[in-house]
Image (tube, rainbow, N blue to C red; front, side, top):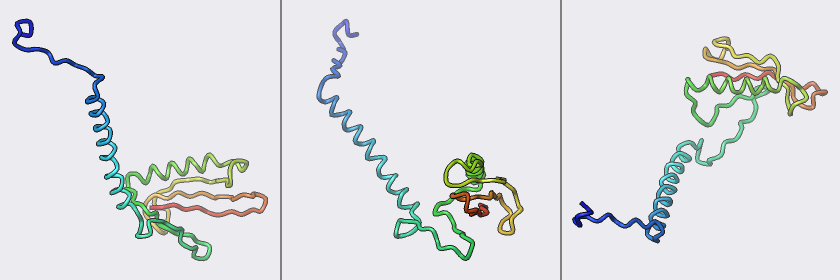
Length: 139
């Protein structure tokens, strides 16, 4: 039809300023559309009005706390496996500021829960002082 003169193809000029302005507007809209959800998620995930989480003081020899975020029952197993692998990588006392031994994940063996539990014996640096502790993490 364009050969007969009825329709003419539009002239495509990608070097025009209108194309540059369009690209800049689209980029700005995309960036702004990510800022709003990030702000809303940050406000909903904050633990309290202070927007800071602090470790609670220990109760004798026991330090017990809840994480300031929610983890689903399905995802908690993955977190336990990740931390147990991290502890297993620190089984040699020449690495880092602690050494872990006897790392194991159990189910229902805790007096505190019938869910999954991670247990490890940790030795803290400097290792010649013999500072050791037992680590429990359970759901």
